[in-house]
Image 1 (cartoon, rainbow over the protein chains, first blue to last red):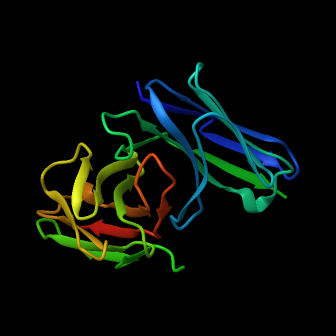
Image 2 (cartoon, one colour):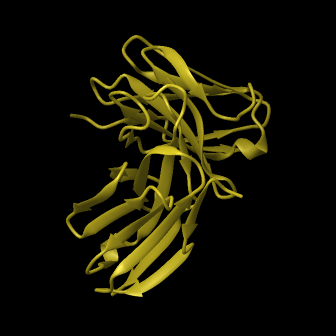
Length: 113
Length: 113
């Protein structure tokens, strides 16, 4: 079983729809990251969460530490949101500050005009 | 500030050869992490350097090595290349390293023939 599971693997939606991508993990973590990868490979960090909720523009990320679950929401989706969204966790290690990221397999999002 | 740069961007090598990839972090960032991305395995952590010291290493064979210089620039080396080493190699820099937010470079796409 992978330490980080994402769902769905693929998601196609119409422009304007509300999008939810889910991430579940099985290990103790110090932080969870949501990343965006466009065709061509470049990765952009969207959020880093250790508790609660964060919002940036039309993007909202939440995390429930007790349930080991996080969600990424996109409101009023737009074709430019089409990308692969990757969840990554930093597993609690013996020394905070030098941990490593473990990644989910990603969710490929396509927004149709 | 200039972003993370990686050179070269594309590389074609033959089985058995060795390759060196370079990563220049954002000015002031002391941590550089390296990741391998393949269609089959997704994103996987290779190693992380902080102030010229390797602090963490992923589960890769000894053919994969790296180093960091006093100016925080980092190189990774893969010796005795195998077909399975074909991948996108990404580096990411940050002031302190995981679990904190990381800034990714554009990647080097390595093809082994």
